[in-house]
Image: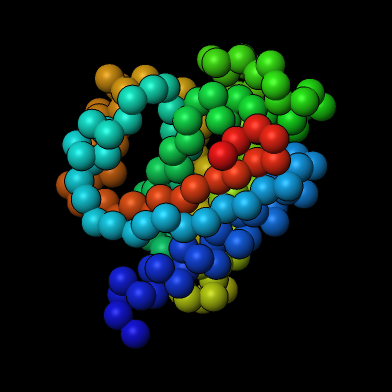
Length: 167
């Protein structure tokens, strides 16, 4: 099996796990699908970002050594955090409040656990993804943050649907 096929299979498994985890966490129907796996560079990704994003930095170990970055649109992150704190998501702020950032931190930790669970199927029982930090950055600061990951990136692009809120 080629590396690309392995990565696509991993992405499909992660998408299923993310949908199940997010649905249980926020109490809404969630579907996640893998849109694409591609190799690119930090500058290309940064130039494609148009709004504020939440950047969650993950550190891999145990066979998945290296850094990863989980990017979500800040408004989408705010909606998920709003649901987690018991609101309905319809009036989630455009910019994350401290409360929303803290709540979304829990979402990110749950997502990292999904990545860990799926990575262990490929890399062994010691594979681990840990969240190092989660912060909001505008597109201007994105390039600098992403350049810290190196000159080449493999990007997993997921589409997320949250019942009545995100599509």
